[in-house]
Length: 162
Ligand SMILES: [Fe+2]
Ligand SMILES: [Fe+2]
Image: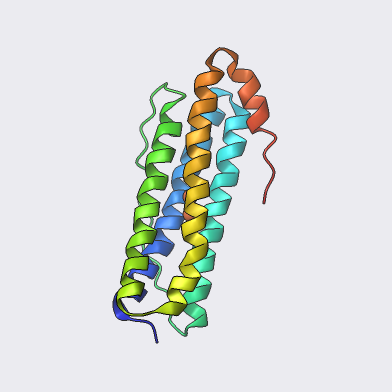
């Protein structure tokens, strides 16, 4: 049986992953409105990935016979005005926030000698490194191709689902 605190944090993480999907969908919509369909495509796939993360945590809870309690998803907090770079910066900031959140659950699992949850979370710890790297790379690429935004947009449009 998982510890109550760990259960609560995992439940909250389901919500955070779904919120991430919402946030990235909002960014995709921002880029669609700007005519940058490659950026939009990139963030739509990102949103899908976040839904997958939420599903994984749900299943883990359910495999442990714990009912999942879905909470309301907040309105995405991004304010981008006309700044094409702003969502990229927010995305990196947000992934760092999610990394911290995963680490907090891990710390609780360690505290309660919950080896099962530690093992489950290992995938997420690794994934967050990837997520932060991707978000950081995107800012670098943006800076490098500011004068040829359409080329970067074309490149981002080629991202394939994993
Ligand atoms: Fe995620
Ligand atoms: Fe993420």
